[in-house]
Structure formats: C-alpha cells, structure tokens
Figure 1 (cartoon, rainbow, N blue to C red):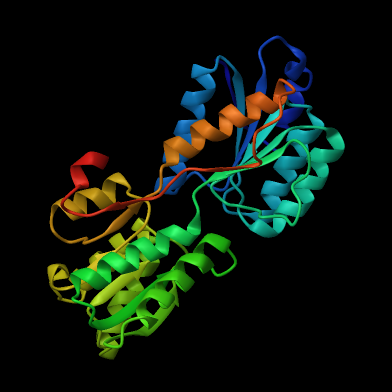
Figure 2 (figure 1 turned 180 degrees about the vertical axis):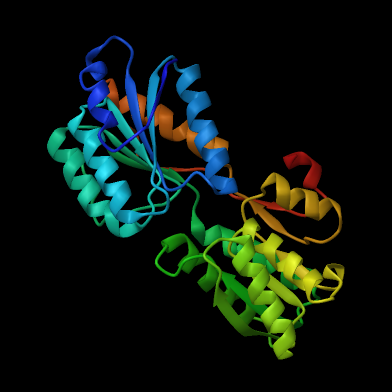
Amino acid sequence: MKQWLSISLGASLLFTGLAHASTPLIGVGMAKYNDNFQTILRHGVEKQVAVMDADIFMENGQDDVELQMRQFRNLVSSKVDAIVVAMVNGKSAPEMMRLASEAKVPLVFVNRNPDPAKWPAQTAFVGSDELESGTLQMEELARRANYKGNVVILVGDPSNKSSVMRTEDVEKVVAKYPNMKVVQKKIGNWERSQAATILVDWVKQGVDFSIVAANNDEMAIGAIMGLEKAGKNAKDYLVGGIDGTPDGLKLMAEGKMAVSVFQDAVGQANGAVDAALSMARGETLASPVIWVPFRLITPENRQEFE
C-alpha cells in the first residue's frame, strides 16, 4: 500500500489519474486527527486499506466544516475510486452526496450518520446505532446507583446527531426512575479539558450530583480530572463515558470510571473500507446502512476490551 500524504489543499492534484491504475485509490476525509476515537478510526482505515492491497490519500478536516468541504471537492475532482468520510458536521452531508453522486464516485460515511430521507446510489453508512449507546450507559449507571441520585450530563456537540441522541437517551432513562433527576447539562465539545473545567465549576457552585454521564470517554476522563482538581475523590462518584478508549479503560481499572460503551472504531473502519471497495468494483451492497453493535463495558468485563 502507498499512503499519499496531504500537504495542502491543492495536493490532491498530484494524484489525479492514479485512480485509474490497477490498484484502487481510496480518498479519506477525517473530521480531525487530535481525538482519541478518531485516531483509532483513522489507523483502522489505514490498516484495512493495506490489508485490501489498495492505496489511500487521507485529509485532516481539523474540525473545520469549510476546510473539510474543500478537501472533499478535491477528492471528487481527482477521481479517486471511492471516498470514505468521517464528517465534521452532518450539515455537510447533502452537498457531499450531491457531489459524489454527480461524479459517480462511491461514498461511504463512517461513524457519523447522515441519515438521508433516501440513500443515493453508491452511497452508504457504516457505524453504530446511537439509540443503543446512551441507553446502555445510563441504564448501567442507574443500576449501580440503585436507581437514585442526581445526574449531570456532559454534551459533546449539539450540532452532532450522535451527541444529541446520546443526551436524549440518557434523559429518557433518568426520567423512568422517580428517585433520579438531571440537575445540570453542559456542552464540553467532546474534549477532556473543557469537561474538567465544567466539573470544577459545578463543584465550586455547589451543584449536588453523584452521577456523571458523558457523551464520550474523553469528557468522562475530563470529568474525573475536574473532580480531583476540585478536591473530590472520583471514586465517590459514578462516571460513565462512551467509546471504550484505552485511556478510559485505564481509569476504569483504577476504579475511577464506572461505565463505558464500546464503540468499535476498528470494526467501523473495516466495514467502511470494505463497502467502499465493493462499490468501487461495481458491486451493490445488501443495505446502504451497515451497523456495528455497541457493547457495554464495566469493571467486570473490562479486560475483554483491552
């Protein structure tokens, strides 16, 4: 496998025509590189492309919607054999689908579901069903809390559908139990540093809570850091995340994180690359949506995910 490094927005011009070689060329647009889950996803894509004996050209969207759209247009105009994209923002999806469809370039969304009313030909999504993640997380936190206690929620990004669904699922579970309630929720933008600051502020403000439900492991880690910075013992709280990242599992082993939900980044990466190459060969997928199941992680089964 050859890996074509993205040096500038115009760099894609360097490989125009390579897609017509015998080795298929997959263009990949990542939301950002400096994120633990996205890093695992990115490396998974790279490894699967190598296994499938294809070439790859990868772009870093740097969490910038406009930058990623420019990168996407370059990939389309360069006539890669297929595109795999982890969107910065779901609002980009209609334009991405239009551009790829007009150019007849197979397009696979990974991790973040565009969920169109109708799937265009040669377009697919590989990821996990967000109806499961927040529900699995909060039901286990509730069970461990004996179905009582005040809950705070760390929200990833309100413009991201996964974040919205995870938050709603947590709220629905809490609403089922009379002795539980959500007392605060705040946006942490998926980042541990922001989550840590939020938790310090909540403690200083005297917010009464015993359970933290974070939309991802990074914010759950930040919550633990914030509690400790505020002079609290993190083990006195039930903190839950989503993703099952190595850093999160390490804190679970230390008894500081109670729950996570494994989002199989490698499984998503493998499925996305396989779907992209299948469509590039002219094959029709059995379904445009390919689910990779979530799995609950607790201290009791943690070692299965390490």
